[in-house]
Amino acid sequence: MPGIRFVQLPPAALSALVEGDLDTASRVAGTPLSQYLIDENWLWRIRLADITADPDAAEWIARAAITDPDGIVVGHGGFHGPPDEHGVVEVAYSVDPAHRRQGYARAMLRVMLDRADADPRVTAVRASIRPDNAGSRATIKGFGFRKVGEQWDPEDGLEDVYLRPTR
Image (tube, rainbow, N blue to C red; front, side):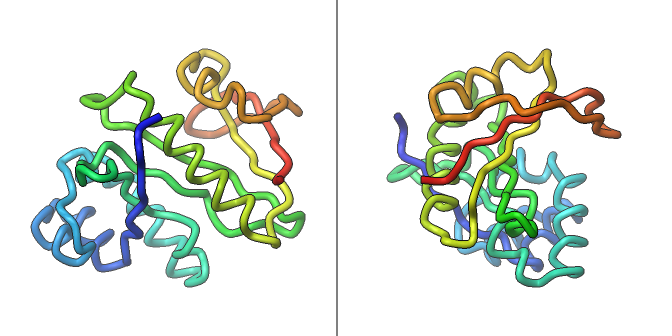
């Protein structure tokens, strides 16, 4: 599995990504970022609002996924927010199309699961996946996720909900 590390994107970097300013975003993040992160500016708007509403959310969300040791941005990942009242966090990740089908999604998920497993506040990790998203279903396979239900997402439509207890 390829090596992945996450770099937290502080609010100033998120703002620069929303504005399409890759140079400033990279400088603030302390690492060269990619056009793919600019293309995902819809997400950074949401994450900026999340961090404004709850500054503690910053440690859980909005991270660039970078290959280790090469330092290439291959996507982004994190959680939708801090643990909820039941100790559940939901994973979120995306791989730049230029880097897909190389094991990065599974490597990103592994790092996120390790993070969740190490935090005593977290009891389980959730994943919500559209039934037609074979790639994401394959990504979580073998990590202990079990389908626990379905939900309707206003953006994605019907999603299968999976849960994995922490270890």
